[in-house]
Amino acid sequence: MTTVWNNILHFTDVISLLIILPANMFILVMNILDWRKNTRLDISDQLISGLGLLSLSHRILQVSFRYTVLIHGFHVITKSAWLLIDITYLSQIFCTLLYSTWLAMHFCLKIVNINRNLYIYIQSRFPKMFPWILLLSVLASILISVPAALNMSDNYGNYTVLLNPSSSPLKSFISLILYLAFFSFFFSFFFILVLVTIVSLYKHINRMQNKTMNFRSEIVEAHVTAVKTLIALLGFNLLYFGSVILTVEDYGRLQSMYILLLIYTTCHVLSLIILIRGSSKLRKKLHAIWRSCAVGFSSN
Image: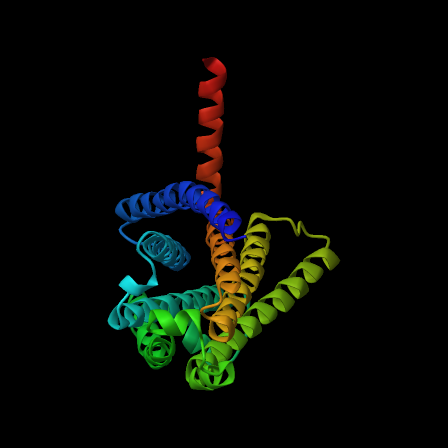
């Protein structure tokens, strides 16, 4: 059974890297060219680039860890290495949620109109927080992840414990309560932002229909695409959160680790599809590249 799982993961590792590496290069190159042309980069493009880099770094960490263990075994990983791996793993997942939340907030502030002084103030101040909020999000993710990572490395930081986990899953779960509490808070905030944006857009489309206006205008289409992207990211982060719970409860059990690695592989590929489809600029450019390639192949 182990051999079958390893073969499956070998295959998915190769396929995922063949998708993720070019996709991330595409996102970064397009946004860098846009930044050089306009001397600025839209907030959504900054966040999409950040989410893409997080997905790529998480994929590289996962593949590197798996092949290190496969070739040399768990015993070569020291306790300090376990701590670094756990901090990186937890902070990447939490930072992904933060970037997704800021993206939801950005779309919400653009789509939803509320005539309140505080809301208007946030609308004017939020764009000025970039790109510093991205760096602060990374720092906050690391600080929040350190206590949880310390506990995980204490419980699972050696080979014998990993193969014969004796610590209580409930105890490990309680020790991660701070991390889980912050994650739950921002996930709930993310969910509320998505819900508010959906309701506001639905009311706006209904008003336009009642006035017999063209509710399939370019602006509405862009807003609908933004909402679809947020819904997809909501499901993506929920899957990520579930993987953290699975890690805490079943850490060290080979079957659970195989399933977890497969979930992450799927998440990394899906995240890039969501990000590219959620950006009209990237989507149109990709379609143009596909058309050029198709014309080139047909002419040959």
